[in-house]
Image (cartoon, rainbow, N blue to C red):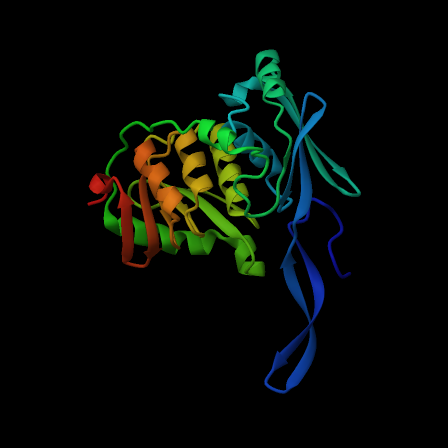
Length: 271
């Protein structure tokens, strides 16, 4: 059957007409899905994001942490994923103090794939957005970046099927990949990774983040918010990402491709 049967399906099958030169062939293709995901806190919808409908518990927890809605996973008392015809809700119950703070912020956010500042209503809000300074992280060897890229390629299962999603990987200092999450949105993939790590009580003290995307401001901001000290991306950084990385004490690496890479901030961690 063409399409996908459930919001929980990360991909579906669709008819396609494939052209090579002057000839066309009818076929089917595996296509990544994206659905509206509403993040609901104590009965109030705070955000609607377009996301790949898998690992949504990880996504909700990671988003809550990187957006400063909670300071630790234990401040979310329960979490439930509920499917509707129009999309999916992730319902969370927050500790009273955290929910009161969320209500004071009165931040209504309508997100879309790849948008890193959706919901920021003024330049003053952006300037006030906290970017902490990460603790000094351990050293990583340049060869670890190459190893991590090779391992990540074999672990991007949804990308292998569809070619349409980003990957976020937490890697040990030697380049071995510990944890991977995928999504049509690079920020969503990172939130999923951070949420999965928090649920599994993993530490970000040693190792590095590898993104199969460009390094935007939001990637660096989210990484710094949970203490990640080294961020590597296979594509280019933005200027704002470099400035935030310099401010936050994050080693930012771009164009991590094979044995080549460029270090834009705090290069002392790479040798």
